[in-house]
Length: 104
Image 1 (cartoon, rainbow, N blue to C red):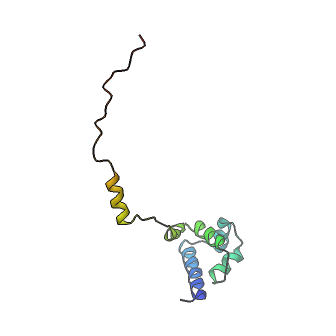
Image 2 (image 1 turned 120 degrees about the vertical axis):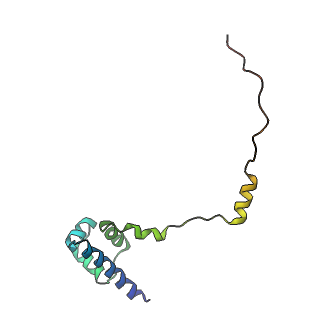
């Protein structure tokens, strides 16, 4: 998919969800803190600032879309095995059997 096609798809996605929520461009633009004309540009597939896109997602309750950008750190199986080897397997036998001296 070309860049232009993807931008138009994002615009159509925004417009679809706005219409499903039965909201006007002005209502969503006000909630997002942008101009109505900026939202119109976004819906028509024109290039807008990424922060504008995030603001519109927030106004439409679609921030969950941003979850795909979450980076999850994974531990390799070898590192996990080494960590498991280093983990304590028993309690130590070192105990202090002496009772502390009383202040009395």
